[in-house]
Length: 115
Image (cartoon, rainbow, N blue to C red; front, top):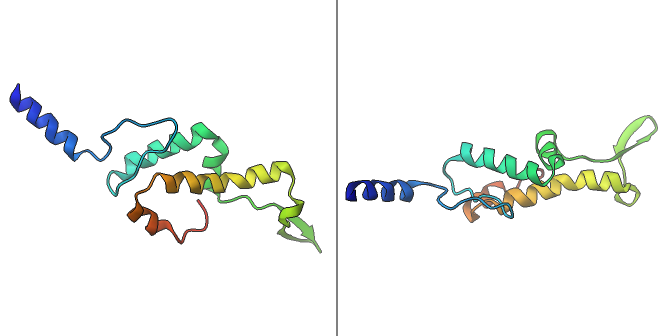
């Protein structure tokens, strides 16, 4: 019995994610077990709003207008409520992802401009 307890203690010490997940905050990524963290982060993001995951997969939404038969970014002051909500998904994704990183990992993505 003592041997089993020692083995379990060693296993627990070597696990990257010892604590259970929360529905209120993302799982912390600490440089190990990226495949596990990625799947859990995807589930977390989709549980908040599937549009957030879509922004990660397809890039940020930028409302456009047609000027002289060319598509140009629409000025923010002219965005509709629906356009603003859709554009906000990328911002929310960046916030959630950065909240799930240690300081070292955060500095690795600091220069990224989209989720």
